[in-house]
Image (cartoon, rainbow, N blue to C red; front, side):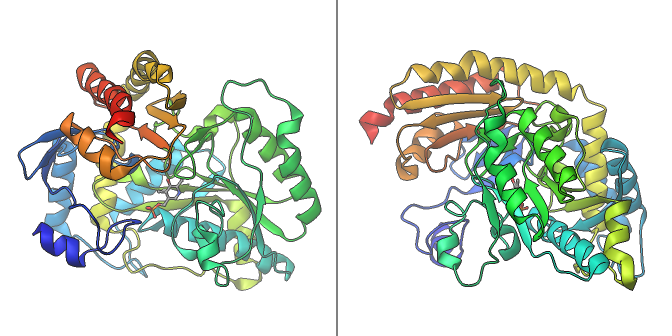
Length: 424
Ligand SMILES: *Cc1c(COP(=O)(O)O)cnc(C)c1O
């Protein structure tokens, strides 16, 4: 089986003929992944932010099975169903009250495409003038489809490889005022200048609130987000917040924008929406935006085949119920406290540049690039699943991780990094 995988199946950002075999997962439960070797390893990644309740959760299994016996899918054009309606109600309840409309799609990247289209159509419909640019931030990440890629960091987003096909957007300097740093107006200057000079062409600003994820795992000051919102209002530009990674409690707030007490015009959610059971995302927006989109008799031009898939919506409903009825704030706070106590120790290692922590997110930035071929087996040997990128070792464990399991994870990271020099 592994041989076929190696020869024919492509994996994320990986060569078609990988040097090493993939690890084969046969089952997963709680925070553990079980490999074909029999090894049980702790998943520090929550399968890329999504598995917040851990694996094989009875409530989510039940929700899926019950929905399966009713209908697993039905088209959304001209039809609707209870799982989507319930999910819409919950999402509107837990997000800012200015958000009134929801567009369900199948993945985070698509929810970003929808957000961008909303913004472009908003201006195009009302003013008969196409505002064609998005102002994004360096070190940002918003997904892998072409539109989403065009607002990702130009370097880590590999814009050079797509030079002629990618929409050209405008980039502001990455947020430089880190979480907890004292605010200074100099931190917003570059963004402000770009907005001032180009606002007549800019349809929207897009950014990940408080935590820039896959573009660099950077945690920045809520003050910056506040100033961005003020300037968007001042220059009459829409604000798109991408909470696909940060949403549903990960940073210690249900949504990271709550740190800045602001509201977006358009909000993208995904990843943890179904507790990591299946792919589902949503784009939320306000009455103002939808009225703009629809002026002149237009409609939002998007409609995926699997829009609001009932199975995914039913599991999302169960996942949100589980989350909202759980002491998630205390759990995330407890993880944060423990990460501060244990992961911060990595700063004593020579190869470590900095440790950053917020909520249930821990990041160890190294002075050196990571060699996955060396580090992955070393982590597995120690019983953990950690998937670094560039020079970043980072974890965002399921909220249900126990104190002992988290200690196991942080110690494994310390030990692997300590050995890294010698095994390199
Ligand atoms: C993962 C991610 C996306 C893309 O979501 P997919 O479901 O992988 O398409 C977009 N934005 C952010 C912030 C993400 O973390």
